[in-house]
Length: 469
Ligand code: ADP
Image (cartoon, rainbow, N blue to C red; front, side, top):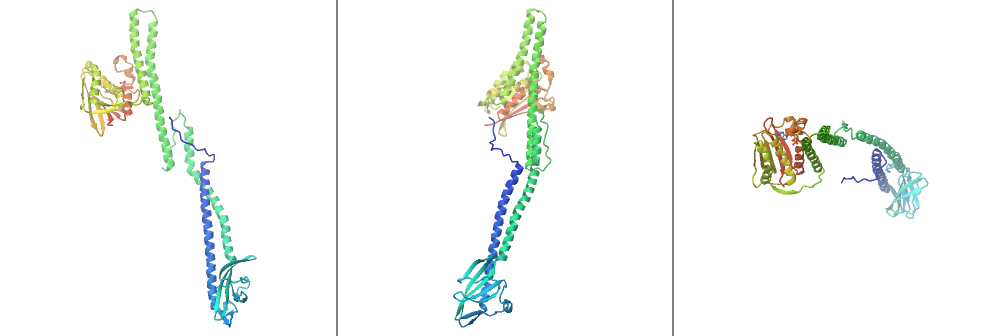
């Protein structure tokens, strides 16, 4: 069954916009939190600063108080500059009787009226447009008692805070707009190669798999994506071409014997003939039909192997006995050509495998070895354990295989002799070029490997590696 990728509902907003929106939302929240923090922090600090100024001023004012019996008054009635004692001329100082009646005042003229009834500590008063911060402290000097109050207008501070708030109200949205435009531009630039990739993907059709992205940018995520895409196209193209070649070759292989049959029938039917001649023709036709049956069986077999229709029937196989039985089967062919056929395999060597498939594999390899080895030659089979694998080697003393054919030898319908052998039905070497392809697929289905080694005129060596399970 094909795997499906789970999909969420596709969004109609382009990715570029979605990225920017998410970015802006995140940045907006961060900026808001940061601005709020900044505002509250500044407000707190400014207020704390005012409170400590008021307290300091009150302590200094206490030093400048005169007593006259139970009356109290500021020493420096002329103003703060006279004594230089008062730290701040933005401040208003009041002296109050214990009952809260105003006794004396100093500093700012237009200050707020004193707080009634007096109570030690800080208080914030709003009078008309102004906001005042007032600090009250008790006074006890000799018999005299009362209160000293220091007031400061908070409007300059509130104005500073308001200015900051106004700047933030303009600055934050402006920053978001600028960042949004920049983000949109950057997202567009970052995603531009994707548009190129999808354009290429759209222009690729089943009949034209030649196009590639050939991404020129850096080897980042997109570079890797483009490269993976190109490599996938390479593989697809190779598979497509193999399939195309396979179909072409298969039809060619089927057509040749069919055309021969048709020609033969036409010639035979062209005039009446003696019965013996019909028998002769039919016998020859039977040979062609056998070839066709063999070919279609091979094709069917390879198709089933490809589709893994039949699970492997794995079993334990004792190699010595197994290869011995196959050799018995092919020995009549070897005897005809006086070929020395022998094996050296340890009695206890075993492999796990599907016996029917392995019979087919070894029959193909031994059949070829005997077929291509000249009279009086030698075919040997050896086996040993190597690198956690069983390695079975089939060598012959035939003509070998020219180096340029080796890379293609296991391809379907590939023949070293090309069409020549097939066109000579009598030669006995006219296979369809599927035998080695089948052997290769069987080895692969077992999780093993089949490879060939050959030097000119030094015979061919096929090496089969099967995993030990
Ligand atoms: P065929 O059925 O035509 O023999 P194979 O797939 O079995 O097809 O073999 C493909 C080609 O490999 C053959 O055309 C043959 O030339 C070459 N070949 C296979 N085995 C040997 C061998 N032992 N010695 C020399 N050539 C071989």
